[in-house]
Image (cartoon, rainbow, N blue to C red; front, top):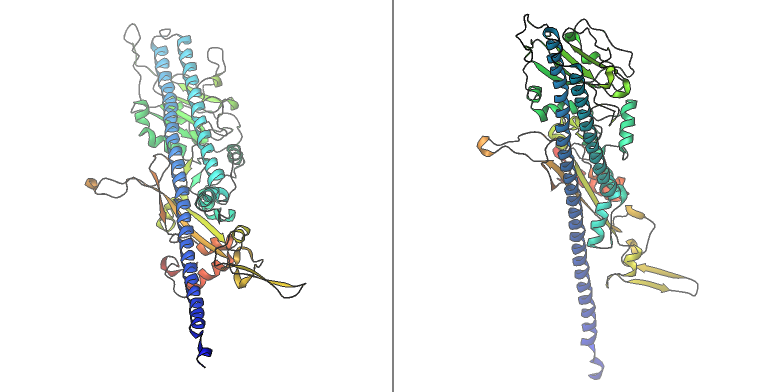
Length: 507
């Protein structure tokens, strides 16, 4: 009887050891899952912030190039104004003391001015190309297909992946629903009249739209500063016709209206001096009669149209007679259409339509999503499983066996893809590219100006994936194939989850 009771403690110890081992393995399993969850979320945050940083740097570079373009455009406008002013001086002297300013002297200066503007226009056009190139590189090399996010994920852990479909939100924030367009695509769209930049077209407008004149005005602090004459002006016209039908004849230079000036591109530049009498200063003697050259006007477009208007003083409008035996359209122009279809080089523009939507859309400032996932049933995971995620193959007969994979849902690998919640671990993060130029506290604080592409004050930060009018994390998850994750998020919202967006509107 005594000898038969031996070994009871060993049985109890074995059962306790099994339970203890199970508890240890469960603790390690939960700890590893928590660690992996923190890892994938930190990787997503790092990728989202990296996308925001590279975007902010791109927008700052575009802003610097735009400022350089503005400087060139101001110089071009100033040259147009000087052509107008010198025309008036030339006309006034010809009225009271002809021959003092020789025709060749005037014509040579006229040609020099046109050549100067041609050179400036070419340089401004090159800056537009450079801005387009870096914008395209941002979209194609970093944002599209989550390429930058994928690089960050692989650097953190080779198990992490970035689904290409996860780039949809970020791409739409920057570029709308359009594909990546080259400069030629943009120009062709402008020629066809199909280019748009409104609500839903992203934060960046590659064409520039109608903003070059506004940008030049902002950059020049007004046209009076450009030409330093209170009675003069320089401007940008947009015209209305797509095909030139010839010149309109005016009774006087003051009646010339750039809005009715028809050009192939529908764009032109003007410079004028109205309502001021020029007192000739180079006459040998004081003029016996007041000069009659009291206005002047020059208007030009690209050379391809062979059109130009140049009127000064006593010369009869529209002033198309040859000058110095050369066709008049060879002067006063802004040269060849470097960045067709307009004479003025287009600039990369901030989408003011998105800006006007206000705080409900982050003032159009792009919010970039990053979506990463870890597949617990991937071949890589099976090749290097955790010690407690064991893979068993039970052989019941010679012709049948059953697999049990502790890392997969229901103990086996199922062809569920990304939609299986248990199989895939997903992390979503968002970075905001925002414009930061505050007013000093001594001046009352607040913002000095709205977001724009004229000053390089773009920054990056991490934000919640929710909050804006079109933020739909569940839709982004579903669009990337994580349908069960999206359904779970929507159910959380239905149960009162506070992350359901502003005002409890849900997804």
